[in-house]
Length: 239
Picture 1 (tube, rainbow, N blue to C red):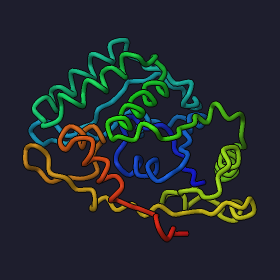
Picture 2 (cartoon, rainbow, N blue to C red; picture 1 turned 90 degrees about the horizontal axis):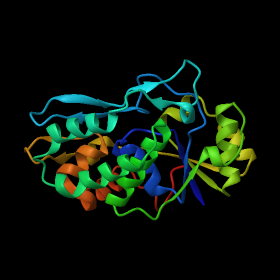
Picture 3 (cartoon, one colour; picture 1 turned 180 degrees about the vertical axis):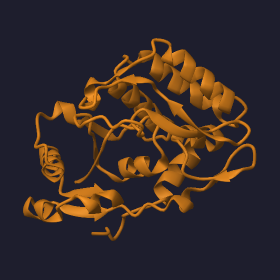
Picture 4 (tube, rainbow, N blue to C red; picture 1 turned 30 degrees about the vertical axis):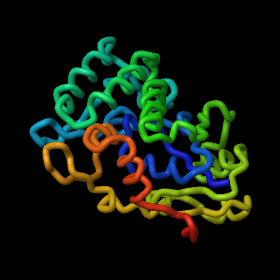
């Protein structure tokens, strides 16, 4: 069984979803420290006139807050996110089929950051035709070590993982020997963002933006293809 683990992201990019689509089990790592000004509460989008901008959820978060303890700071966040999205994407080719799904997900979420991110994440998978993926929240798996590698090893063991998909950033901190001692093979994700370039409804050729941008301009089927196209470890897993 192949496992991937990642902290919650707000409407993540395709490299994030690539991990999910290539794993048998994806663990939603909501038990680690919140990181200010990172992708946990913001995502990169493009305006209707081609300007890059951030779509951001304002949050209440102390310097040591865990992600699952962070709450949204603005009571009108749903209306303000919806307004920003409509300004950027109302004229995109697939807005009418994409945004209602996300808007419904927002409406059913609590004001906790992890719940908002999770609801939108599940909605994105549905739009990609991947709503049957096995997703497990780390907060449901019990306490783990505070050591980054030992935490990952333990999470893999608790869901029966034999292989673990690691992002490139993991090379700087992961102790691969700890995985090997546990009988878990590490697969290094070699995601190529250039392989996921797409043409927006306005004719611009771009890559690396939020799944929201991709879905609104090319639809669910093509977004799924692009996310898989960026890196596919099957067959011949890269270890």
